Length: 93
Image 1 (cartoon, rainbow, N blue to C red):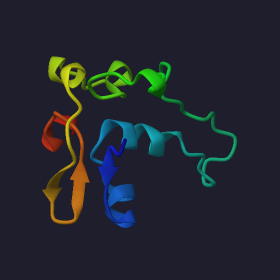
Image 2 (tube, rainbow, N blue to C red):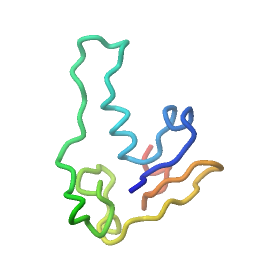
Image 3 (cartoon, one colour):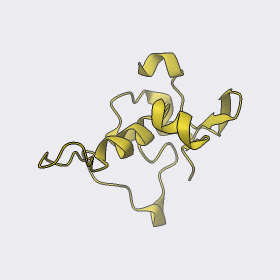
Image 4 (tube, rainbow, N blue to C red):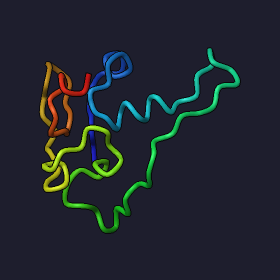
C-alpha cells in the first residue's frame, strides 16, 4: 500500500505521512558517523492478514479511531503530492 507519493525533493524536505517520516528518520546519515540508528517502534502487521485500516496505525503517534476503521485513499494535498492519512498535514507538525 502506498502511503505517500511525491517528487523526491519535496518528499525528503517535508514528508507528510507519519510512516514516511519514520522511514526517513531511520536512514543512516553519513554526516553523523557513529550515531545509533533510529527505528520505527513496534512490529509491522502481517500483510497476509492486512488490517482494515491503516497498517501503520498501531505504530503511529498520530493515530485516531478512524485510522483503524478504513484505509484512507491517496488524496492530493498539494499539487503533485498525495498521501493516505486521516489526519491533516497541519496536525502532524
